[in-house]
Structure formats: C-alpha cells, structure tokens
Amino acid sequence: MKKYSILLSFLFITHFVKAQSAIRYQSIDGLTILGRSFPQQTTYKRFPDSLSSLLRLPVWKLSTNSTGLAIYFESNSTQINAKWKTGVTTQFPHVAATLVKGLDLYALDHEQWYYVGIGKPNHDSYQDATIVKGLDGKSRPYLLYLPDYETIDSLFIGVDSNAFVQPVSSSVFAHKKPVVFYGTSIVQGASAMRSGMAYPAIIERRLQRETINLGFSGNGQLDSMLAVIMANIDASCYVIDCGPNLSPQLAAERTLPFLKQLRKLSPTTPILLVEQIEYPTARFISSLDEKIKSINHSFLDAFQSMKKGGDHNLYYLSSKGLIGEDGESTVDGVHLTDLGFFRMAEGLIKKLQTIIK
Image 1 (cartoon, one colour):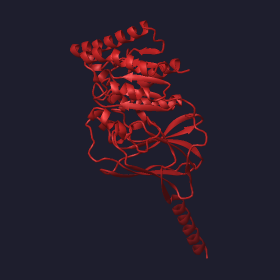
Image 2 (cartoon, one colour; image 1 turned 60 degrees about the horizontal axis):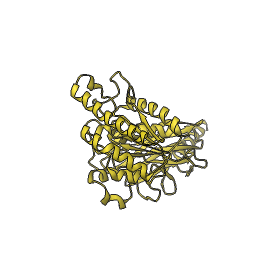
Image 3 (cartoon, one colour; image 1 turned 90 degrees about the horizontal axis):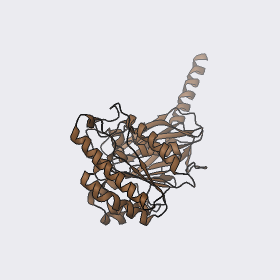
Image 4 (cartoon, one colour; image 1 turned 180 degrees about the vertical axis):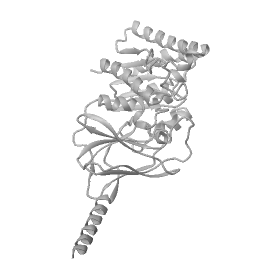
C-alpha cells in the first residue's frame, strides 16, 4: 500500500511538472513594438518600403535590420521562450552572434529595467530558444530586443500554457516623445554582446523613453535624406553621432548643411551633435589623432556657426573621456564593448537630462 501511494505521488508530481512546463506560442500581433520610425510600419524593418528608392542602397539594406526594435509586453509566465526567423549569412569577426541574430530580454522591477535572459541563435535561419525559465509567475512588463544586424521575418513568444501575453496595461513610455539617434556601426550596436547593450537601448531603459536607432554600419555619412526622415519623426531630441564614418573632408562639407536642413525642417526640436569618440590607439598613431581632431574641429565650427545664427536648441557633446581614458572600452580600437557602451550611455544620459525637460 505504501509503495502504491509513493507511485501515485510520483505520477502526480510528474504530471504537474509536465503541465507547468507545457509551452504555448503566440504571435506578437497586437503587442507594442518600440523603435519604429514610422508608426504605420507593419514589419520588423526600421523604414517603410516607400523609402527604398530615396536612400543609398547600403543605407536601405542596413535599414532592414531590426536594430533598436523591442517588443513591449506583459506576462505572468514562469518561462519565456521564442521562435524567430532571421537571414542566414550575416556574420562579423568582431561581433557576437547574440548581437547579430539573438534576442535580449529585460523586465521592469520597482521602476527599473533589469536583464532577464537571452535568446541564443542556434541555427542559420530558424531560431528556437528558451530565454528564461523558473520565474515566479508574477505579472510584469518585459522588453524583448530584436537582433541588431539581421532582418526578423517572424517572431513568436512562448509561455506557460495557462499564462497570458498581453499589451502593457500602464506603459512607462506613454506620452513621451522618442529620442532619435543617427550614426554609424557604433550607434547600431557594434560590438555589444547583445542588442540591449547598444547605447541607445541603455538610454531607453534608463530614461524610460523610447529610442529610435538610425545607426548604419559604415554609412552614417550625414546624407541629406536622413535629415528629411528624422524631421518627420516627432522627437524629443535628435542625436547625431556620425564622426567615425566621416573623413575630414566630408565632415567639413556636410556637417553645417545637414544641421541647417534638419533645423529648417524641424524648427524647435533639440539637436545634440556628438563629437567623434577618441579611439584608444590614437595616442600611438599621430595620423589617426589628427584625423579625429580635424573631424571634431569641423563639428565645433558648424555648431558655433549655428549658435551665432540664433539656434538656441542646438547642443554639443565633447568626446573627452566619453568612453573612458584607460583604453579598455573597445573590441578592436574602434567598436565598443559593453563597457564602452555603458560609459557612453552614462555621458549621453547626463547631457540628455539637461536637454529634455
């Protein structure tokens, strides 16, 4: 009789565990997607297809990456899984696959965002991962960041069979205009370990304000069409961080015209011009040091010219110490590690807090 009772208990526990671990997948239809530059978009790309003919081809191709996009939802599940489809071929020697193709999950707790888990890519295209399990089952808001260097084709979130996934009932991002970041591979996120560590994403969580990431690897070159696109986004601030993709000649030729065009199209929105960061190897390579100083000189000249012209909503951020001065903030002397992104976010947050009232 005792053995029979133990067997029944074992079967009940096994059934209970299986019931608890059953996963139900659902599409993200109806959930909030943060980071879209145009609300009417229906895909996981950063720009609508109507802009494809108006942009340089490399910029358009990079705009199809889901950089900066995050699914904002609420759930009471004890586990969160995901199935998603990406492209096949994208890879870089200095960038982790978790940034290129992975998902990155954060949860809100006592008005602060904390890392929860990552969806590691495990196939060329069709990904299937357990992001986290063993949660307490309390209902809370989540942010699920999409890949920074791939195009998402579809996404399904997996939760307990009896749990819910729904829009957030009280959004911390509501009634706040987004911050728009325009720039290079560094803005896009290279070379963070995961998409939530790109500096615009860090700033999004710290300021509790949506950010729109217009970073284009190798192609943040102050194209005039980007000024038009940015001006069509109702933003709290435009942040321009294009130094690493400019030659001294391009910086001299394009900075002032770009600022003037953006200001003409958006007369009152604050604009923050960020200096080119100081690469750690520049202390040993004089030609690189001179190049950076020349680019930043053109930035400062353009800024001062605009200020003298009466622009009271234009701001400037020096790169001095922005990523630290110990040489430990990059993976290759240019692209930032998580440490570099954290430091850069800290500097930008301080500046943005004085700009955005």
